[in-house]
Image 1 (cartoon, rainbow, N blue to C red):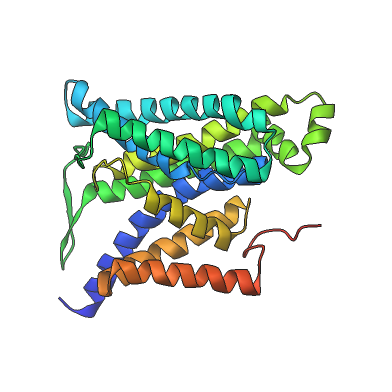
Image 2 (cartoon, rainbow, N blue to C red):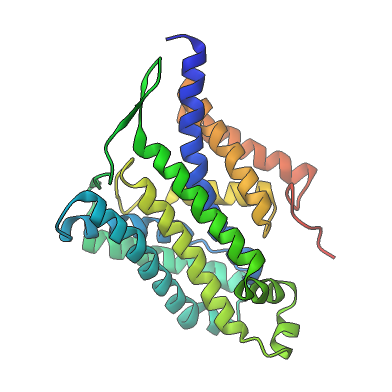
Length: 293
């Protein structure tokens, strides 16, 4: 196969990575942008979504498409509910102090990880894809489900943008982001907003995991890479900037797909880490982040 088809394959793989990363990193960006909380447990919410998807696929009878559709609805709801409980039980009682919440979310990370190990086990387990078809190109065949992942992620992100920019809930979240004390003075229940935002961030990570787990496998240690790449994406795009996060996710995903195809996945991580170091030196607030007043 010539260089051109190889490059096309790398770009298509990169688009899948970018779609999943955009969903995952958007949740992390929302939590930091509105709550000013660095959620170190974000990768474990991703892992939890994949593990729950496996349980749904095993215990729901019928075709794979039915269990997958159910998992895509139920898993983010369950993970979001657990995140809201964690916010109420832990983060709220720490008054969302930055240093304290970092330590607290590290604790949540280990609790979720060890719970998954106890209930799910140490083995990686596959989840069947809801559709099984191939798109036949002149040079190679490509798994159709991967294109479904890209389309589904694009629809979810579009819906997220509509909610944040056009709805009353989005207005309340943006008001809380600008000044939580002023928002509280105007009668906004900031604690409820924070619980909802933390739940939404975790649910987005879980959605990304449910979409990608038929391509990979569910494993109790699978949260590390999504967490690292999400942090890289948010730092490059700008802390709290959803637009910057999406643009950075596309760039990092495509870079990851191309470098991994032609060289090695480890090199792709090195390139992304070097990009973060360069951004922090040249523009510490990120490409689209705002300079602190």
